[in-house]
Length: 93
Image (tube, rainbow, N blue to C red):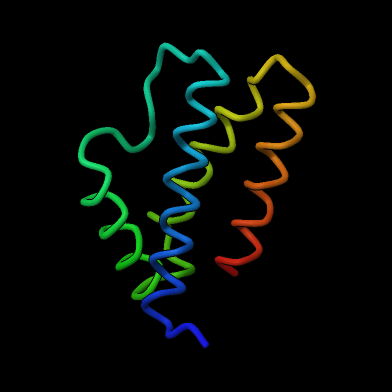
């Protein structure tokens, strides 16, 4: 059984990976939500998930990714990213 810290890290990695994938698929000129050092962002996200899972900052960061995902032109890819986005939101709840 995974402990809470491991679950938070796993979810943080999913959020980071979703951001990466959405950015690549959208072709956005706005940039990624999480830019810079991957390990640092994952660690920060995991801490945020653990300490404030319903917090405004976490939900805002995830919402930015979701908003960018909605701009993906390829319907199949957009659907895939939005499904992952929704699954992440459910897990955060």
